[in-house]
Length: 378
Image (cartoon, rainbow, N blue to C red; front, side, top):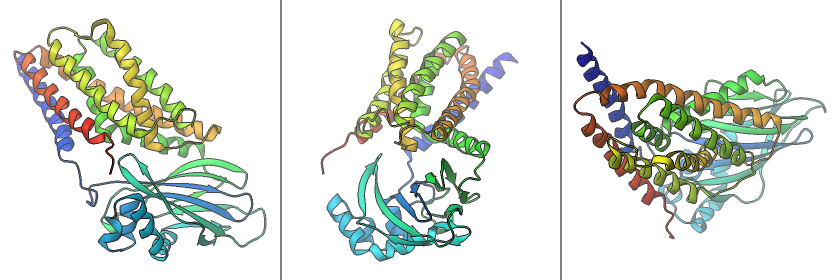
């Protein structure tokens, strides 16, 4: 009976890992409905009128505005800026229909100010757009911010989230706007709701951050005892929490072009150590220092998911802590599920083969990520 249970556990683990690795080697194309995106909005104002700075994925924005392929397939900064300039009216029409600001329930009138800009965010190019919203009404009213950018109905992406940071009506805060909850009312936001939204963002980022999942899996494959798992996971958690909070609060700024390849390299190092170790820990006394250093780098990667670079309000800190707790809870849940399966797998005759079978795909995919993430000059 025990033997049958071990083999069943091994089968479950294989199915879980197979599903993860299938996602790794079959990435969704940029235009597919399987893809997701995040919009970013900075909303500020000292009176009735409001300034909004939007950061939107360039090719998705141009597709959603129903422009031709020469616009959304444009490469190079100069050509993308030219396309934004000649398609200014179409882009503004789309954005202002999908992103709204109201004052005492009355719509504010948007006007694009200045020229659009473009910049890299991860491996995508984002368009930076600035709008002035003129609001009518008596002083002392309240603003509300709504986003329906890139909805599922457009079929280009799904589950779009708009991350909003606002400083309006004497209130500072942040919110995650989704289709089910597209509006934040300034001054009425409940802290509990904000905590929950960023907690779910953290859960989502770890579950769909396949590079972080591979690193965690590689650590678990190399761990030989429950104590080793606890110590290793704690070391990784402390390290990535330090850099995540410092980077997300704007105190540390390391370009993604450096962070992302190093994250991929960290997975390769740990997975190769598992291949070399087999029955023993080849990293030895260097394992925890290596995990700590790589944890610092992964923290920068976690911060890049939010890309909030403004220092220090308590509201922002609360959101960041909630995001980090979401990551930690998900990490612990995955360890609780996967490590017992790995322990049972090690007690079967196929343990040596299984370590190789699990580690080689991780090495291969991580090497691909490493070279793919190295920025090359155009």
